[in-house]
Image 1 (cartoon, rainbow, N blue to C red):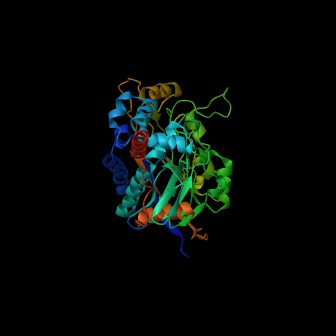
Image 2 (image 1 turned 120 degrees about the vertical axis):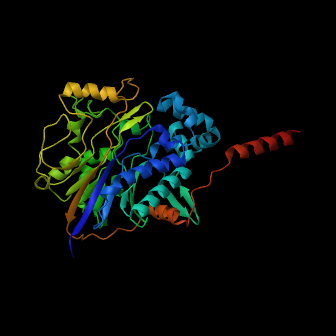
Image 3 (image 1 turned 30 degrees about the horizontal axis):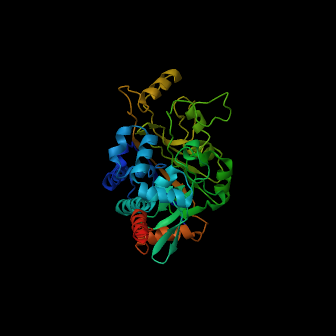
Length: 413
């Protein structure tokens, strides 16, 4: 069989809280990313577009634009939980989850449908293979024409789509950061054994969302299953030129760009089975949360001999494409710039991050892998996309409570 020649595209977008306060605003923000990628879509070969981590998380703000004036994500989430109490409280009590997880689960059916249908429509319209980034997602099973949600579960999940809009597969993030655990957005960790590799015309795709790409057991698992192109959607919730949030030695913290060399770049520099990696990163201040980074596409050093690297690190081969940071210079100066860009800094440069699109043309031998059978969850998502099943219907707990109260008062009379 002939080798696979294809193009990969990494989109580095800039998000704002207002992009998520309505379905129309979210669709427009997602479409803008595909429009930015459009000039780089190859007319003569398949194209894979990779979007960023947690680009569906802020959908919890949908319908809550009135709360953005509270300025912090924690305050806004608290206000939305209270304002949606008829929906959030039953989930909290019935499924024994935290308020922040209950807030997300209460509207997860509508937000999951919006997210998936938006991505499906974009994959079809632009004719691309699409890694949708990731979003907080329940696990579903199909029951007739209705999807049933696994109680209490909410993972950080990537969905992969073909150019005709069909589902290729889904993957959950295994290793969560402290901001994703209890006390943060409170997500459910995925299971390492559930990660699979998806053979496609744009590579044998393995997904390692953000922190997963730093973990040797995740990389070894995907490598052993034949991964040739690693997808690392990312949302780094800190100033890029500060110190890493997860130092291996708290007494000797490293610069974030230095730590990032242990993910995609290190994976492809080893020259094992995983030949290429695509690592898009979102930028922008979301209320009081800061997101920044440098997106990259990496490959074998002999295919990218030009020395270059993230700011604050020494140039090296292996970067097929690399987003610039806001500026270059000595580390103390860049740390100061990072603080100026950060949320609520009050500096004129606040939120002035770089947006860009990267692309690279890649070639791989024909795949020898066979697609694995879809999981129950993937079959449920495909049924949702096909219109053969609908999300779980919202139970009118408030109305049922009023009926029960009226009945009790009537009996008392």
